[in-house]
Amino acid sequence: MLARRIWEGRGPVVAVKWKRIGQRKFDRIIEALVHRAYDATARVEAVNGRGGDGGIDIKVTHGSKVRIFQLKYYPDGFPTTAHKGRRDSIRESFARAMEHQPWEWILVVPCTLTPWEREFVTSLAAGHKVRIAVWDRPKLDGLLATHADLEASFTRKHLFEKAKVYQLERAVLMDGARDVNARVAALGQQVDGLDAHWTLDFARQGDMVVQTLRAKHPRAHEVSPVEITLTGNGPLAPELAESVRRSLGFGLPDEVVLPRETVESLTVSGPEWLSGEHRDVTVRWQPAGKVPLAETAVEMVFLDDGQVLASYPGTLAHVGRGSVGRSLTVDMTGGSMELMTPEASGVSASLRFTFALEKLEPSAALRLIGMRQRIMNGGAFEVRTDAGVIGGGELSPNSEAARQEVAELRSYVEDLEVVQRHCEQHFPVPGEVTPTERVALRMARLLIQEHCAISPFLPWIRFHLSGEDSPILQAVLSGRPHAFQGSNRACPITVAGRQLDLGPVRLYHPRVVVDEEDGRQALAALEAGRAEGHVVTVRPEGGECFRLLRHDATPRDGWTPTPLELPGFTEPR
Image (cartoon, rainbow, N blue to C red):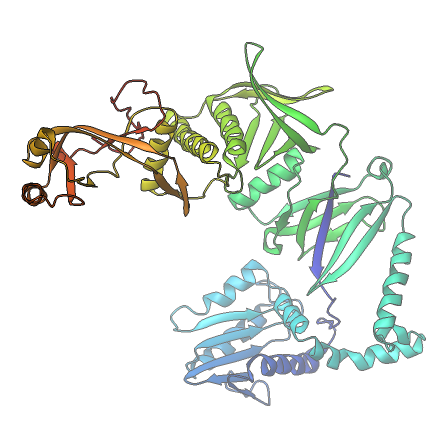
């Protein structure tokens, strides 16, 4: 089997037989439950004498708030036609209770209410400032499961006497944990003997007993078919409906849980011992153990008129089939591709590709981004193994805006890869990059590839005078624009907290001016013969920035800067 079905009911099974215990024992159990639930925070009073109680069976007082519990032992409920008198009795009890102005009124009954019975109870609140709640059988079973010691106190003596009669002292675990092992092992043997093809694995998980149907051999589903039919309580929520479609429709290995409120009934058809209808259950199905695959190495191939445009390697992780079509999943480093192919002709296949770059170095990340771009561009594709094609289809192109977003991501990772390789510092793609880091990466890539780049981080520089005078220096210090060229032994940038040094660079701008005050002071120092070591600040004219070239680069276009071409960023000048 590719998947196993699990259905869950409340467990351990509640031993209280609500339809048989009678009014007196019902009252005692409810009183004990209310005390257990509220004793720690409120005052609980059980009123003696049902009927003359002023509409109160149990009263819970917490500060100024009063809860009134009304107990009605109606094992088969209070449907409109059959038990009109019971509804009249509930109305009368509610009316008497309202004289005490409670904050909440709670009806307690030993049956599971129908939607119409529940609607009748909640309708009583019309015209009153009161909350209304119902403790019916599912609620009581849940409370007893939570407070299991209370259930044991009402049932243990009866069970122990029965165990002695049938010489089954072990059934009440008189020898503790050793009896648990023995009873479970013995029960497992009994279950295994029920059928030649199927058995049940079982376990207690918290307040649930889980039964797992397991095939004894690979052909069990053929020689002894088991059919499971679910009847829902209305339409499923969209996300849950999609999970069901993926799992049952295409055989994808998803775990799906249908909460008990969504399931009206679960009917099992098959061997007599297994067949039957189940209600008030949570239904869960999940993948079985990983199925060994004959072929695991695959290629995702993109085609144009039958010619291969690109191919990407992966590992076949899953092959499945459901009522609607087939599915397969391919894993690759950092990503996963899922293909759902309907059996009906003319219906397009569905492909979903997910990936995460955070733990990948840029070279590996670029392969995933390239595959993503191929998928978004649309066109024909195939999933191939050495044995042949195992899946494929035709993809529709994504919007231009979506494709542009992925193109920008690729550009960023390419810049990062070039810089890491040049600086010999290799690390995973950062999850986030600041605007400053993004500009620095593009500028660094241009410099590494021997382009001239404007550095928005160099709007001015400072240099020290040697003490020697010259006409050019006099002109610059006098405030007249002049070409300037210099050098720096290092050009560091910071990415993801790491400093990456691009190495020595040359600086240039065709028109720089000196700060006016610096110029006056420098000229005076030259005239006095004290200019050596004097600091002068120069700035490119018009608010521009300096241009950079790697020191050993052969300029492609001289000092003509190459644009950064980053969408959303203003080109520096």
